[in-house]
Length: 443
Image (tube, rainbow, N blue to C red; front, side, top):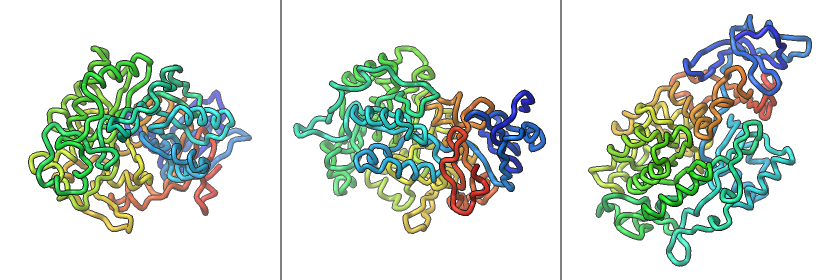
């Protein structure tokens, strides 16, 4: 909306602006003032906000939209160990991410991150989730719970200030294994089939049902403590038994309160039975998912889970039409947002050599519209960390976290989405990445 009482610091005009607001409004121009969106509107109205000091960028028809938000990443953890923190910020920003949720850090790393923030070295927004436990077994064969006796979350309140670049809204809890010897296997309600027991994946399991890290009573008490401290819990949960146990623990902690207030969430969601789908919707549990689904070698799902339930492996995408808050996680996989957007929309998978695997019908039926996919990558991960009022869409008053793309994802052939490039990334009104050759778009 036009605001004639103020003059903009910066104006982008003559483009296609995807606001990602509740109406998925499209417009032509954006005005920025004091790190925030001043207005979005047609070219004429926004250009009327130009003053003598206003920088004006002609988009030349290119697409401008909110910065992408990654709801589950491990960039910071690895960079602190290897002393390449600024390099990983470059990776995220060059891919159009203006905010990430760093899943699984320890108290010492939190203190290090707080110092980095104080030194003014954070160039993108980071939401930290402290580890409750680690995703492997200790020498005694028990889940490795290294930090809970000296946890940051037990000594400090959550940091939820929107004006800070570093926030600490949650705690990550590993509920089951991941198919590696040191981690065990996803925990299943029914045992793994005989076909799985000859596979390397199953050799990691410590029982024919996989590996559940906590009993129901143990997890209930863990989640209740996290909940009572004012933090949201984010669970690594892959198998249906782990997911069922987690949902029960969330219900126990909520004790009748709506999850909208607390936003407990499940990561991965790898094997969801039909009955569990309903419970996500009933309890308003948030769910993270990768944009891409490995459609190469789909027969392995039959081997691992059996003919009765292998199709459940794609049910994570069935959460979207149920109205569940679903948001993007790249985890340690493809960080490229266009590969994830392409996967959400087409259900096709891009190999490292650039070849593409087509989905079988049981996967293909879960395609998501381009509009819904863009929400999964912007406003929904903002919602997951309670920042939907300041991030995730281009609306007046929100932070000017913006990307410019080489093509409009609404207009290109779906098969070409994966080839779209990020040409500019802005965080809080400041250009943090500019693609070579496109400096005219970068204030």
